[in-house]
Length: 252
Image (cartoon, rainbow, N blue to C red; front, side, top):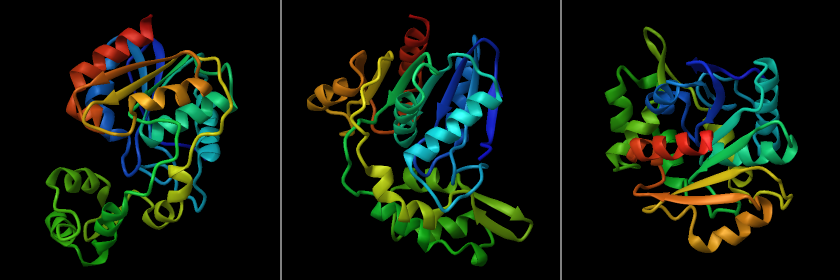
């Protein structure tokens, strides 16, 4: 699968992977800042953004997609930065393709299995009927009874686009993402990897807790941990703090 990407800057290659229901555009602001002295590649994972849709969705496939992207772009020892689902893709890539990445930075994602918790988001997405829309506001109104949180609605609506003048469509493959949720939430295989790995947790999020550190170190013995005052969307809630942490990690 040939993944869509956006490139900014020159220098050491940094590949950034978004999370579930997101896209490369979520990282534009921070990515452009990091591109001051790096070559930053913002990548859409399968079934998201402008990358192709597929009926298959799991971390082995997504890691393979990433490997083909790195080979196609001839990237040498890139740093892989992944948020949430993208973080697990980065981790699985490090396991399946040892030696290809210089380092990995995982933003608010552990190695454990997560309990299903995306039901309200999926209901909100499925409530939108693209064929009935005349504006993005229509989509928000259809979504609102299922998702009262304004910020989450705005995040989800970033994946809605005008297919043509009179037609809206989703860039995310909602039926496949719903069907693949058990694979998306599953634990990482216990296959140790000798790679520098930074795990950034949001203090207002419960995706990485201090008691998770030992389990993470079983797979990534060189793991380092840091926290930022943010929820799960660390890059949106504390972009300056995350930029500082990532710059230090990339150059150390």
